[in-house]
Image (cartoon, rainbow, N blue to C red; front, side, top):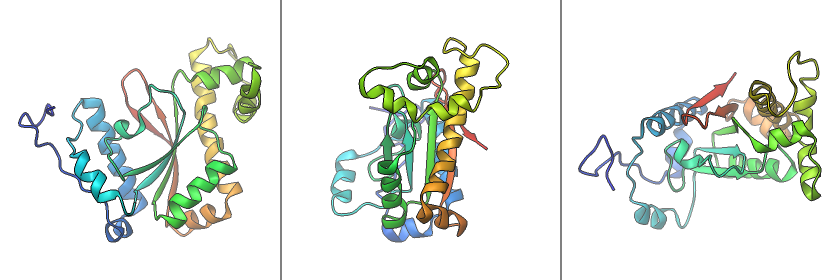
Length: 220
């Protein structure tokens, strides 16, 4: 398999990060790495990696750069979206990319224990979970799951237009609010992560993934 920029298949060479290399990274540098990786993904210029070698090198330890909270949607391949390989990212996935105690514990492990420098909450366009929350869907355990997303819907109770799942603009607004509310919940409900962010050890950021073109837009 070849890379469009590197016909000979050489590609960019990236190795599994060591603890010392991870320690030297700043949250800002990690954000820039993700931006650059997404630009390669959008351009169809993914890095060629020797996965067999990376598997062997990562077997005894891991020192990822970031943890990404994403929706379970199969159309959002997180590592590919950021052109990352084995040992680069922790990825937590749940429909609607909301925060709960299990996700918070995973983030605390990723950052406080394993040294990741960034928490990224990433929503996406055309999200089925967001549409279901807007529509008030009730079905088995999905009902309880969607209750975690409802605050983002209620956040837009004053929205002047069509507040249905058929209005893609409204769906986008709710999805973006869900990202921001999830970021705030991380800060409010995890004193460990709040302290790490205040000290500059990590950053907590949000983003939206556009399934029409693969581009990630970071949320202010």
